[in-house]
Amino acid sequence: MSTDWDVAVVGAGIAGLTAARVAADRGLRVVAYDRLTPGGQLVNLTALHDHPGGTGPELVSALTAAAEAAGVRIGYAEVTRVHPGSAVRLETGDGEVTAGVVVVAAGLGPGRLGLPAEEALVGRGISTCAGCDGPLFRGRAVAVVGEDEWTAEEALELAGWASAVTVLVPGPPRWSPERAERLAAAGTVEVLTGAAVTALRGEGVLSGVVVRTADGERDLPVAGLFPFVDRRGPEGLVDGLAADEHGRLVGAGNVLVAGDARAGAEQSLAAAEADGRAAGEAAVAALAATAGSLRIVDPTYGLPPEDDAGPVEAAGSTATWTDVALFTNSKPNATELLRGLGQRLQAHWELPELGFAAKESASVAADKDTIDWLSQRFKMVLVAVGD
Ligand SMILES: Cc1cc2nc3c(=O)[nH]c(=O)nc-3n(C[C@H](O)[C@H](O)[C@H](O)COP(=O)(O)OP(=O)(O)OC[C@H]3O[C@@H](n4cnc5c(N)ncnc54)[C@H](O)[C@@H]3O)c2cc1C
Image (cartoon, rainbow, N blue to C red; front, side):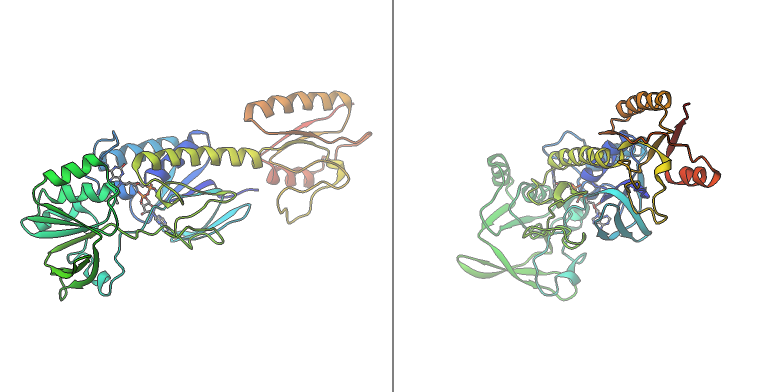
């Protein structure tokens, strides 16, 4: 089935760019859409931890350059809806396209507390990027909400500017002992476990939060609040695709999911990169399995219907109409020639199967209409006529 793209990737973070590059390296036509600029979460990371990539922007440049060099087209558009099918349909801000395989690598949404007036305070005290907004809080108190490794790193980065950093951990901390030691040694960082933010203070600009712990509720005056909890996956983006309780997706069929957006993902750069590589390879395998059946076709069995809805059994034969047609009039010398050629092409393109259809005493229907139809329907037509 012909599609606009072999592979369409939704989200050009580290997972999406890696998946796109791997698929394009194997000769596939690949587009990677991003509603912002490529890079995803990496764009915000001034320092990378547990990854040898330098700074975030340096790694973004390297990943984007490698993808573009492999032939990936970056589509600067949001994908608003994905409709699975043998040709997957994507609605984008730039129009509708089809693809043989889709890789959803849309990451997670920003951290949120789910409190009234929260959205109105985003950019007015509430931020999810320490590297970008930390300097705005020089000499002032801030709070960070979260429990994972990256919450700890963001708190440590903020400690470089803020007068005091309170880390509010809803459950038990999940960061490593080494990070716990660095937090303890920072001097200006206090960690409160079992702490929930129950209200936001401030008219137009954040001035504090109300924190509930086992000891009760208290006001915490802060100028900045960095929530890294309840980051949701792209639930609902793909028709009919299952999601876990965090809105992260479970891939099915030719819709693959990679990186943070995948149910069960570890949420680290190394894991997202490995996931992207696996998704790129899975896309190559999926397309090789569907696109490449190579059959020897005898046109005297009749042409498939006009609407041409995918592979069609030619009437009365075992032939399937596919991208490559090898034609013979069934004479032994022509048939042998095409069989040998077919086997070479099969090996060269790693096609999964080589079919053959023949009919004794057939004559070649090589009239102009047939040839026109063939040239539109098939990517390649090879003809051998024997006598
Ligand atoms: C604050 C913080 C610090 C971190 N620090 C580290 C660290 O030091 N080391 C480490 O290993 N990990 C770190 N991580 C984790 C790491 O950044 C992520 O695991 C990784 O970046 C995920 O990559 P991704 O490609 O899956 O998603 P993302 O990087 O989130 O990329 C997703 C992309 O999809 C795009 N997108 C989303 N929806 C659509 C749509 N509908 N249409 C088009 N585009 C869309 C987004 O614009 C985005 O560019 C950190 C995470 C956070 C939150």
